Image (cartoon, rainbow over all chains, first blue to last red; front, top):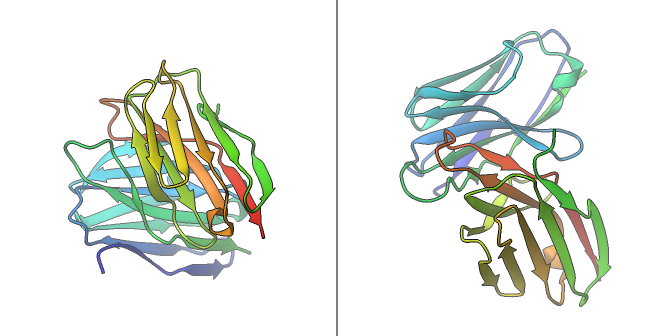
Length: 114
Length: 112
């Protein structure tokens, strides 16, 4: 199936731990994103990569570090997790050139920090 | 600061009723997209509108982009339980490093 996939779907961890979320898209898109959706369902962009190059880095604590080994993958590593990091994290991709930046989202990773 | 405000925030209606959801901004956008998100899933694109005054129909859903490209509406006719979900509008600007600004969302519940 062509899609954006994320692992894990659920992540429960203790404060202070380090964790990673993986994302892969097989749509052949050039641009990938990480979004955070809070408890009020507000979707806020965190990072954007185009062909493995960082192009958007919103005001996000430097405990969050994205890594793009190739244009089909964009992983998110979080150090020293805090209670406020609890949220649903979505990976998305969009094609480059033409179009209007339509986003294709993954199923989300629900992160709970205890 | 929320650049795109959606109203209402919550809407609960009976099956068969009509409804309209609004997406408003003081900023001009080059395009406006609508997404629907179901529980436990990511948002899915419904439509993109790009011209001021443009109207697009998707079965029972009608989308309109305001003449000044600052606002949009989504009208659902004869709502069905399958329409239940979180509706998100998202504005795009040309030359803005491919970034969308998402609205605050409208949670729609259609009761049988």
